Every structure is written in structure tokens, then in C-alpha cells.
Amino acid sequence: MSENNWLKIPKEKEIHETISSLKNRGINVFIVGNKKEALEKIKEIIPKRSEIMFGSSLTLEEIGFFSLLESEKNRWKNFSEKIKNENDPSKRQDLRRKAVTAEYFLGSVNAIAKTGELVACDASGSRVGAYPFAAKNLILVAGIQKITKNLEEAIKRVREYVFPLENERAKKIYGMPSATAKWVIIEREIIPNRINLILVKEKLGF
Image (cartoon, rainbow, N blue to C red; front, side, top):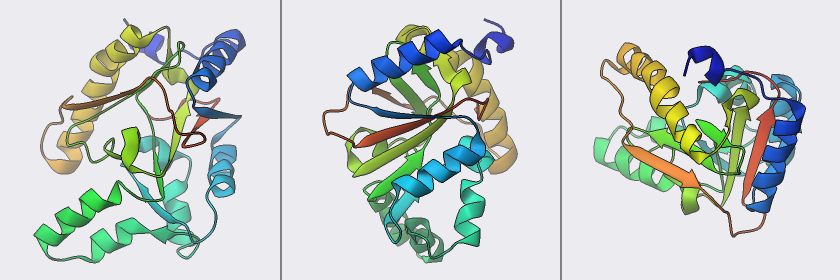
């Protein structure tokens, strides 16, 4: 499938069908028009002074989330600051593991099946480790171009489109290639209101 197909904006009918499928699987969905509204929705969902953590995410960067953390340092208790300030490598690694249990964990997904499954993939697992259970509350932000026909196509999107882009990014930033090593597929959430997906009517991230 060509790159343009993976970036195609779905029709309103497909968007509504996807939202309905997601809700039937226990996932809250907020549909917003743009990046600014996505950021405002995050501010609305997370109470001030709550503990937060996040995975690396181009989508969060594009909506201005990381800039918000810099400009409003005291809005939330940012767990990543503990990691950043720890100089002992062993203790830092322990903190990274504890980070996935944050009260609110933010990230994105690589694909959203119209049938309601969420798909995320990571090399180390640090980004997706919080998704299945560890985080008390999970907030995911994704552009609507990530909607695919079904789960099979969602996985195909990761392998054919997302991974090559992430691999090149990793080599530039970290000096080493990435890998489709750790996968998370959320088919259903049994804890009410645990997962909130902010679906943005713009192309965001990979």
C-alpha cells in the first residue's frame, strides 16, 4: 500500500463507526478539531497537581504538550523530572519502570482499527508498558489518519509505514536502529473510564 493510503483522512461515516466501535470496547473517545483543542482536552481531563508520565511521541510534540510542560512546570507533578535528576544509572532504570504506574500516562498509538482495536508498537517497551494495565489513567492522542479498516490492516500500517519512519528517526536521534519488538493491542478495557482517546481531525505523528 502506498504512503498516501496510510495518510488518507477517513470520511465522517468511517470516523463515527470507529468511535462507536471504540466505545463498545470500553474506551472513552473525545473527537476534537485540531491540535489546540487536543491540548485543551488534556488540560481538562488531568486535574492540577496530578502525577503524570508520558511516552516519547511525535503527536504529543506536535500538539504542544511538551512546550506546555516547560511553560507551566507546576501544573502537574512530572515524573520524568525524577528520572532526569537521577544520576545513578541503576536507580534511573528503576524509576523508568516505576514511571509506567503513573496516575496519568500519556502517549499515542500507531493505528486505530475501525473495528475498535488500538495498536501500539515500541522497541524497548518503555512507551507502551503503561498501556495494558500499569497506568491508573491512560490518555492517548492520535490523528484520524491512523484509522484503518481492521486489525490486520492496523498491524500492516505499523510494519509498512510507521516502522520505516521510526527506524530512520531512531538512527538520527539515538544513533541506532529501532525494532518492532514490543506490541500492545488493546481489544477491550474492562476498567471504566481508564482509557481516554483524543481523536484529532488532523494528520498527526506517524
